[in-house]
Length: 113
Length: 112
Image (tube, rainbow over all chains, first blue to last red; front, side, top):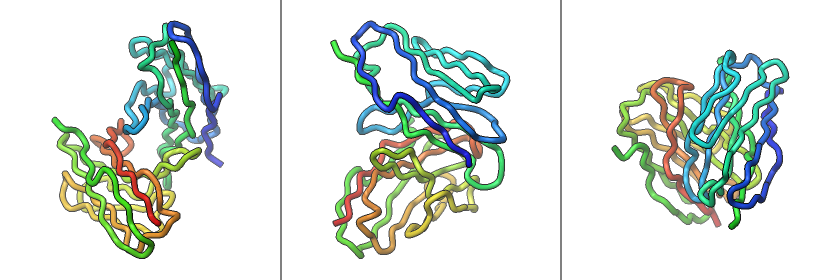
């Protein structure tokens, strides 16, 4: 069964600290993996898109990694800010018939001062 | 550019009532999608339209219908609302099917 599992479910960190969010997937065949940020009461916004051949991709203080062999991805946030408080959603895309976008349940990050 | 817009932002319905959620995009995208998001669950695809004139069922289509009115607009209709349809509904669009998606602000629907 195609699944995307994210951990931890929630995380609290102090402003200025770094953190890493995990995404494990069992989706096959794999096309690409995306990380979205969803602020409370808003729609998700794309952070990164990674294809099979990409290991690392950065977007400002956000760095995503992908290990297609172990089917794991991580999102690293550097020098966290209060505005990073949000839900982070991992999505795996599989180009095959039927449902091709598999969403994780998200990790809720709270950054406190 | 407004991106993806949704109306209404909030709605309360009684069981059995009907309503249509509206979605429009101004990015000239070919593909549009409707999702629902419930607490503790990931976004789930209700219906999508890969291109103007086509619609397909997603993961949870029961109780919903859609209309791709034109390239810009994609509506979601609840014919007879049920409490299980209480959720936040998101519309999204992408240049082509499965390309990067842009989401609207959501509609919060409560069915009593």
